[in-house]
Image: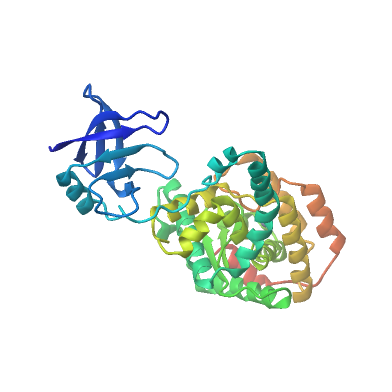
Length: 367
Ligand SMILES: [Zn+2]
C-alpha cells in the first residue's frame, strides 16, 4: 500500500496539519501523524479545487458543503488519483443550502436572501415547472416512479415487477375515464400514464410527467366507481397544475434542477434528490384546494357525478389515521371538513363514470 504525505486544512482552523494518505477500496484514507484514521473520502466524490490540472499539486475536496482541503504534491499520487477519479475536474453540482454562506455577508445580504426565498422562489418555482423541457419532466417522473415502486416492493419482500397489476381490460377502463376527464377542462396533460400497484395503501399519487400511481387499497376501499373516479380527477387536477413538478423543485432545490438540466440526470445527486422528493413532499392546503376544485370541474364537464367522492374521502381519512406511510399521498389531513363541504356544495354533477360491469372488473384487477 503506497502512502503519501499531504497537508490537511480542516476548514475550521487556518493551520495545516501534516497527514498521510492512502488509496484503498475506492476511498482515500486520511491518516494522522499519530497513525489514526481521521477520515475516508470516496474517490468518486473527489474534486481538485485548483483552477485546472497540471499545477504540480492537488487541492482535494470531498463535498460542496465540506470546507476541508487536502493538498498533495507527490507526482505518483497525482497520477494515481487522476487515473482513479474520473470526476476530478468536473464542477460539483450545487447542493440545496449552497446559498447559506452568503448570509454571513451582512444585513443587506440577509434581507436579499430572504427576499429571494420568500418572494422570488415560489414564483420562480411555478415558472420553472412550466418551462422545463418535457423530456426532463418525463425522466424525473420515470425515476420517481421506479423509486416509489421499488421501495414499496422491498417493504412487501417482493419485486417491482410482481407488484404492478397488469390487467389490460382494467387498465383500459381507467385510462378511458382519465382521458375523458383530461379533455373535459383545463390544460390537457400530455402522456398521461396510469400504473396500478398491489398494496394495502388506500391512495393515489400524481408524479411529474403525467404519471399517476394508484394503490390497490384504494380499489378495495371504494364502493362506487364515481368515488374512485373523483380521486383520479383530484390527482389529474394536481397534474394539470403541475403541482408534482413544483413540489419536486421546492423539495430538492432549484440548484438540483439546474444540475439535472446540464446533464448528469443519472448521477447520484439526481437520484438522491428524487428519493428525497418522493418521501418528503406534501402539498399545501392551497394546492389541495386547487386540485379539489379542478376535480369537481372535470367531473362536472365530463358528465360524472362527483358527490360519491365524499364518502371515499372520509374512508381514506379514517384509514390514514390508523396507518402511517412513508410517503405523502392523497393527504386528507389538512381541512377534511372544508374539503367535504366543497364537494358537497357542488351537488350532483352528472351520472356514472363506469358501467357496473367495468367497475366490478376494475375493483378486482389486482386480486
Ligand atoms: Zn392531493
